[in-house]
Length: 465
Image (cartoon, rainbow, N blue to C red):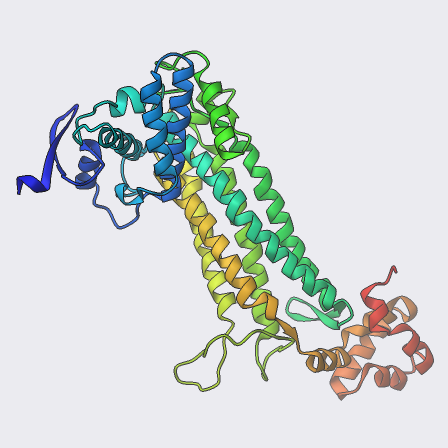
């Protein structure tokens, strides 16, 4: 059994650690003390912490508080971690200390042990790199962990979510253009309204997503300032002068994003309003996507007893008992994702408000919910677009029939004969089962020639053209 474990030490004493793993004593304590669900700290957050270790090592070396050999060992190990080569060495749960100290030390310990392996030393020897003295030099979890959330969220938004949103915008733009001559009846209060084109309807979906894109992109401005160099509470204790600027510059070069040192580290460390704001913009995207998914569900409902204006792609059987049934399953999946993101946003908002004095101890929750929401929305938008939006086709006969039967075309007569007479025509047509034209002629309120000139659905969709 002795061959299966090794003895490592931390400030609280000896700990048995599985012999083959690269983590150390503090990680092992966390595994024992916080066996809460299967929610692991996201790999993207671990990778961002590794980038911080790499940047810190370079900055510390330039500032004369870390020698070149140790710098090179940290950079090599951190680079491998950031590339995903050791993801299995980061087993900790989200539900741990609220600062994220356990995960920060998990990264420090793995880097220490990777350096030990590279140098022919024993795992757990803390030679030639000590997890705290060298890997964590000029840092605290209190500045490194929130900085890692900033970095991970920025990368996942810019490299994952925003490109996917752009493709969804383009997909709706293609529908806007191809449907620009299809005139249909609009609906308000779920009741018939005046006409518009199907392209105009699709343009609303396109621009809702475009507006959400811009809000999310704008939220990144608050993620670029990093608290690194603030160490424990924002004063910069135990960090050399200039470390904050040097480390931020390193990270900007590593990630190709404009990270910089925060002007007031007390503000960025005592609260995480920038992260709360980024999460809020994801919620707004979820609001827009849920509205669009519900529109598409309504417009496609049927195929014979509903609105049935749109044909959605039939991707899979919809019922275990009703043969031939097909459901708007992509809309349903999107609706669930959006609802989940709204709930995660509520938790992040509460977490952001829950900090005390110089420290917010909801960091792992904020990072987990933010990164999980980005992933959910990115994947859902891809599925929504590829499996549904790109394949939507209009049901032209149904659209035309509904347009011809609409009573709300009478709205165009109101400036000519007045609201009351126009209303009387609509009521008479509905009660007697007549067309609007016939009802107008029956009541003698307008000539057939004038009716045909005024009640033109195409001109009603663009009255100022």
